[in-house]
Image 1 (cartoon, helix red, strand yellow):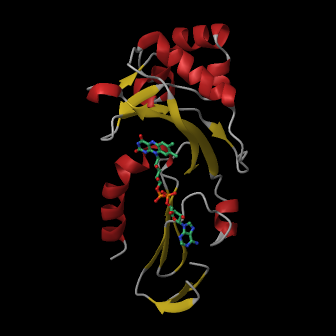
Image 2 (spheres, rainbow, N blue to C red):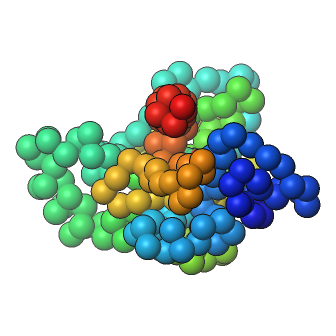
Image 3 (spheres, rainbow, N blue to C red):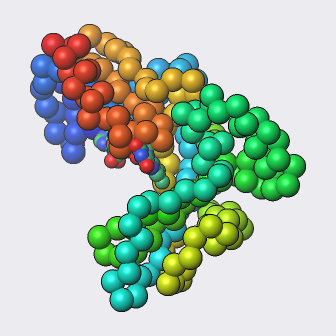
Length: 204
Ligand SMILES: Cc1cc2nc3c(=O)[nH]c(=O)nc-3n(C[C@H](O)[C@H](O)[C@H](O)COP(=O)(O)OP(=O)(O)OC[C@H]3O[C@@H](n4cnc5c(N)ncnc54)[C@H](O)[C@@H]3O)c2cc1C
């Protein structure tokens, strides 16, 4: 979609008409309503990820795994009384983890590959290049609490999502009939179905 003037919008070079228009363009803040995003406080988060070769002999991990760093990443653990002490220790002994927003999780897909991550770099202009030392930090930490048949890495990549610090989403109506839904941050795969239902109900 390259242009909106409710009830019309342009997509794929064609002009369309719709009763309601929802703009869910993720980390592209530049194409549609750039001034709305520029004034919102929204930013981008870049996450480096890795995937191993399929594990030999159909080996399965079972449950997904994470380590102590994850306690410092998710606000669900904010009430833990010893969290401050843990953060202080990590900052003193391994400052590269907070510096690159690293916490380490491992899960397995249906092809038997292990999916490993991740780091968090914040800012509107994420670097297109990945940092090999960040992937190494993730692997080294993982190997301290997990043993698997093969840590041979087949692929590395990074993803980028939109985040509005302090909020779980950004919902705006830049013009009547048009709703922007964005900034689900690192929880969009979990929350988006419920949010979509709620937003549709609200805008009926
Ligand atoms: C590495 C990584 C790990 C994650 N892990 C988790 C997790 O474990 N659990 C969880 O809940 N969430 C996770 N997330 C977050 C989740 O993926 C995002 O919150 C979610 O994808 C946001 O959905 P969205 O539809 O808003 O944006 P996106 O998924 O970014 O989709 C936006 C789409 O709009 C398209 N688009 C943009 N501009 C236009 C335009 N002008 N016209 C037409 N199309 C356009 C884009 O090409 C894109 O396909 C993770 C994200 C990353 C990157």
